[in-house]
Image 1 (cartoon, helix red, strand yellow):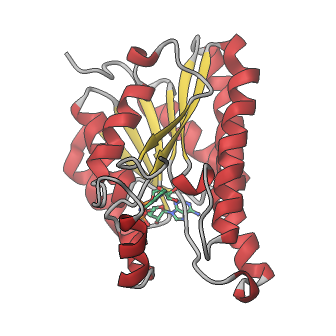
Image 2: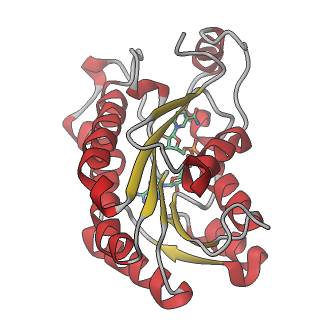
Length: 244
Ligand SMILES: NC(=O)c1ccc[n+]([C@@H]2O[C@H](COP(=O)([O-])OP(=O)(O)OC[C@H]3O[C@@H](n4cnc5c(N)ncnc54)[C@H](O)[C@@H]3O)[C@@H](O)[C@H]2O)c1
């Protein structure tokens, strides 16, 4: 028996990296999954590999209209919508002085507005279904200081705050809202950083290594499943101890 049997999930940014690991694990645990991403070829290939349990949709999380399409797809294809993983995100690394307004706004549009739109889109279908679970992927940068990533830090602290606010407001609909705060995880997102920057981030952590996408997916699975039924408003670091 799967830990997500009977559940239908939307996983944003599901085409690669941590989102892909979550898609694979959720399907292995019995869920039906809508893979949402702007990365079309990889998302379509993943959905084709997973067969009837998954469907891909090109979905920019910063678009209000496209959220309505993604939710409608979950309901039309799989009949319900119980789990939302707000995983899609982008990073921008530069000194504060070198950040442009356009850089700042682009990061907020995906990481902050995208999560807000996702939470808002889930309320009606999840409350009609008797409840649900929303897992927001923040970051260590949403809990503690990070150098050279001011726009990203602003967006990830916003995810932490929205998680708390939504948990308070949505508990009465039996919708739980928690956040996961990955440390340095080996995904294509890190390719934009210099090797020195990635090494410095790893050196910050007691375990002295990067995490693997599956190590995040395991925590997301727990929060998505009924095993975490008394958890809401929690901010869960999965970071090899980097928060210490
Ligand atoms: N990799 C890390 O070290 C790390 C650490 C902490 C937090 N995170 C967070 O984890 C999440 C997953 O990142 P990852 O490491 O797998 O990186 P990644 O770059 O491999 O994957 C991010 C995915 O999001 C998608 N995406 C980007 N913009 C989008 C948009 N507008 N709409 C829909 N999809 C969009 C990308 O196409 C990609 O598939 C992100 O929220 C990221 O901020 C990553």
